[in-house]
Image (cartoon, rainbow, N blue to C red; front, top):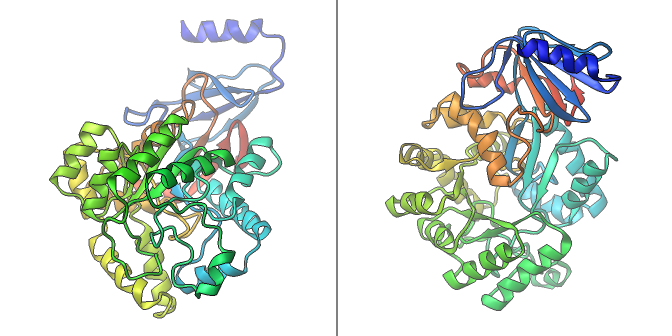
Length: 424
């Protein structure tokens, strides 16, 4: 009956010049559920209009037959920094010598690496120049190709905190560094959020603890008071913006969750209270495990890639990464996929899947984290699954990622919004 109705619909329509049909033997339309068999995905004006059993297509439609490849929704990386691919001392030099224009071009270059890797949507959690905000708008306008971007603008922290770009710089340089993202006290933290809202950001990013890459030996514990964190979250939510919180130490994680954070990034040292707060608040955990790949590769190439204050924290991160996820999975914490690409290499985002599975997830739950869960976290309602009315974000791989998640490291076909980006 479904095929008869589909045929009648095709016959009643006057033209199909703008219709594309993607066909494949196996299609994971709903992550977390069993894949469909042979399926035809009908696309019009960039959106899915039907999922039909078997290989069907209206007359005049463009057909892309992917054969026995495995089709999935476009993937989502909830934590990237598109404007850089450097780290350590190289990142400091890059930040001091790059113009805003150079940063924008670099962001587009890294965005294309990401898109070609099958990640059709990203959440960019901080850059200093506004390069990625500009790229977000350029992609949306169709001026350039790139992933769909949810952007945080400048990340917020206290003075000397993780987002203070003057850390380790000579004092006579401080006046040249934009510090609108620093806040000390409730009123200042409200103001810092409003400054980013005025710039047109989609989400707010803050740090309640120190960071591994902070060029200061101030540890990884709490660096923001509860009233400051609450001021940030309340102001962001007042403006309809979610809040992503960088936090490593237990006290800073718990403070952020108590303040109403929507996601915890890294979340390296949870305790039992943390797990209960995650469950009661409904916040997402974004593990960013593949940061360790970036650290290992840079240190292998240059043992002095990081200054001593940072190297000590890098070595700690290498030892503990994954242990938090091993606690979060059995506790039923909601998990969204995020890599912190920029610390790790752009275009290799799918390396995160292998680490997620190694530390307690299944291929199925890891894919859910990078599709429906990530879409929910980002607040984007029409991505993350292959459903009628959703954006036609479609990828295909050889092999079965539900049995071997490393298949997602080699994406052979990418479609974003109905337009083919890679392969046919």
